[in-house]
Length: 268
Image (cartoon, rainbow, N blue to C red; front, side, top):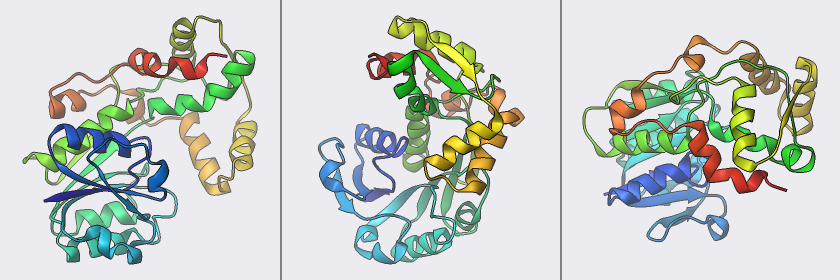
């Protein structure tokens, strides 16, 4: 039996792959560029993208379990992706939501097969957007300084792998957070201590934050959604829950642990 992981080289996808391999599963990884995937040995690499489900007949052949991460471009084709997966013989699915229950999430819930939806709040890896300004100036520019129970992407991968491999998770919706609700300033202090330098928070306006995203190619709607979310995070995003430990049997990793793994990327 084969597990297909879409978005296998993304922030969470590569952790899903690693956890499945650790559990001895046969893993097929879907990626746009297999030559640059940098995934562990033993993974079957397949070229493609889940945003073009009509091209995935071969990728889905022999697959009984599927992991999907909702990304830009999936909203219009996600329903088709789920249908094709079910028709191909997939009987268990996990999905990392896109921040709200959209067409793909709904289609999976109505698919008639076992499914688990993961609803992580803010990713710790969002801090990687700070790399360039920290390295060059020792400055981080953000519009808000509010608490967020940021979650390690490796823990998201661990929960997904558990739900795919073990019974008892069908029909479950898992809100995922880290073990602490930290403000932007608190995260910056942890990062500065780890890299051995003072890092300053420079607050920018809401519009400046939107304009920054637009300059990166983000749509107006998505930019306004992201900045709006950060301006008033939902209660789920700032309230610590123990779902990760309950599902995996391991405590959720701290932001300090994440920083230790990535500290060299922030050093000049």
